Length: 219
Image: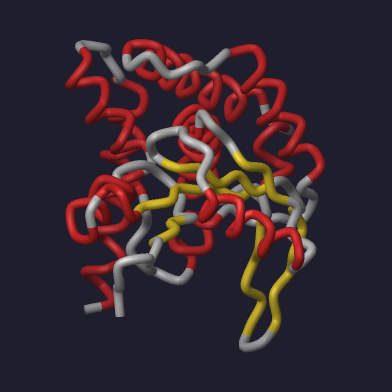
């Protein structure tokens, strides 16, 4: 199905997906993106859409290309607000910071999105996670500002009343989570760059233990 002009666009959470896809189809065919839309599956054919936000798409190389413009125009024609980014990895890590802070905390504490900023303990935990994410990003030359991210994350959570994090949905449904490509990606990058990530590593261990327990019971 992949021809000479085919582009493969990933809008997945976390990090590691683009290099893996590039290893199969070639880096020149990969477009990377992310979206701040949030959805909660209520049942068959019923989806709650509590979070509306920007979608970012870019070339791994950062270049502006005709195919990138075409994809962005297609998204906009579908009334999905979309921005072309020449620094898409910065945008990916901004979203990764959001996910690393919120998903495991929600999954472990069983809190709705807006509740994550209602309790000091949850906020302190997310702040500690974010500090490590910013340190790891900077060690790789990725532009990530702690104050900007913290304001964006808490502001988004305050507005997401009734929203449920995807990892909490996975835990409740006893499914495999994305922990390895969320906080696990932070831990892996920290090891490569010599940055300690004990809080993120703890999140990985705790979610993995919780996941192993319910998957074992489900088997």
